[in-house]
Amino acid sequence: MVELDPLVRAFYAERYVEDDRLVRSGHGQLEFLRTQELVRRYLPGPGATVLDVGGATGVHARWLASDGYAVTLVDPVEEHVAKAAEVGTFAAMRGDARQLEQADDSVDVTLLFGPLYHLLEAADRAQALAEARRVTKTGGLVVAAGISRYAGLLEYGTKGLLSEESVQGFADSLATGRNYDEPDGFTNAYFHHVDELRGEFEQAGFSNIDVLGVEGPAAATLEHSAPEDIPRLLPSALVLARLLENDHRVMSASFHFLAFGRA
Image 1 (cartoon, one colour):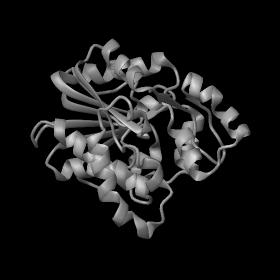
Image 2: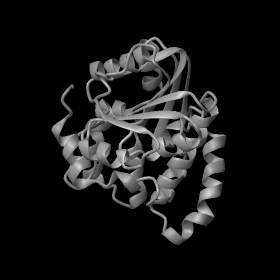
Image 3: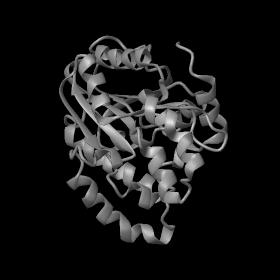
């Protein structure tokens, strides 16, 4: 198996609780609900086979299995795979997006929720997309998540943390898309522009490509809202995200994008 970046592995194994990421904040809840509704919009009917690459502890594999899909989760972090295997409604195995064990044309749907933004090199991202295309049946669906190039800047700005010094700190990541491991922040990652993510799908040979904003402009507001305010804010945030999901003038205000393509 291809070697996982040690800093990424340590981040998820030692510093970050992945299992409750999408329920512990307003932004997480918004991301989860929007991811579900967008993916369900494109999925084939229940009974189809889904390969959840980079599926972590199974937050998406759980609801996909409940919806009637035959799910196999693949993740490079041993702790994630062990936790996912405990669920019991889907298969879980260790693996890397760049070198999948699955056979050619063997699944109906391949999800990449994580691999593209933890592969800093364009060649590695291209290899992950090539592998997803290889294992997905002709005409099957491939879905990949990307983090917006402006996500960190928006988060800092709405936290009241932007200053002349902190803006300078964002200069490199805004120019290159690269985020480097921070002891009190995120780990090594690559942040996309909308058109860049679309271009990677085009270069990988996918057809019928759509790239949509996930959370919409209210992501940062929900990220910093008090827990008691979330039930009031979330319904409106969902409506806003739906209205602007494919408006290129504001899509980058989403923290995440989802790209959809046919193999």
